[in-house]
Image (tube, rainbow, N blue to C red):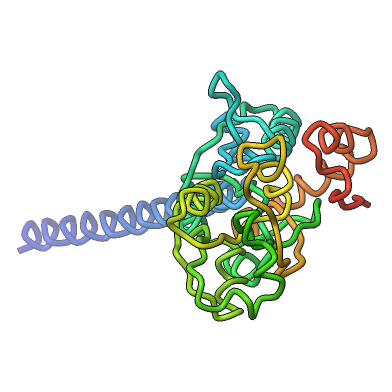
Length: 287
């Protein structure tokens, strides 16, 4: 009996030691788990912080992708197919300040916010009017140029259209998703939405639309004597507006571009480019 009792006692002691060891091990694992969890949280916070910085994201991938349309004198292609224009050249300056290459992506302007949100482009820089759509769905820089929406008609019919009321009943070509479309619809005009402002001009030139609404800056470069459309003229100005660059909502790229605007204005680069592309009277002082 003593022998059996001794064996039982030994077994109980072994089980007790095992339980103690298991408790210690559990404590150690728990501590490691907490450390790992803290480390993981720190890593996640770091990743989240990096993801929230568009500037860091752009610098990491090495390119600033700029969403544009064919829109002289802001963004258009030279004889070699290279994108030039006031906005294109300004974007190159900002890309250089970021230490990255610039890449221009021609987009459907009506899809601009979707392109921005899904990171197909990093910013919208195309003579973009700062509208409620932009301020609600994206982030806009400070204004850098003044503009207006102007109605363009054949020169031989210009005398017939001096007010917005005179345009009622006409088919008006507008760029889909543009400030021109918004302005025309606000006047109750019958709109023919096309892919770009350049396409809107072609509609009028071909006679497939009676008139179009485009940016005043584009009209200054594209219509009238000595231009691609010498037989078209501007008539009614429907709105006055500001141009800005569109970035993602809450993006730190917005402030970075604002800072570069001040530098480029103060060192004369902005004035030089404005003179080069014929928009000196439209530039807004940067402070």
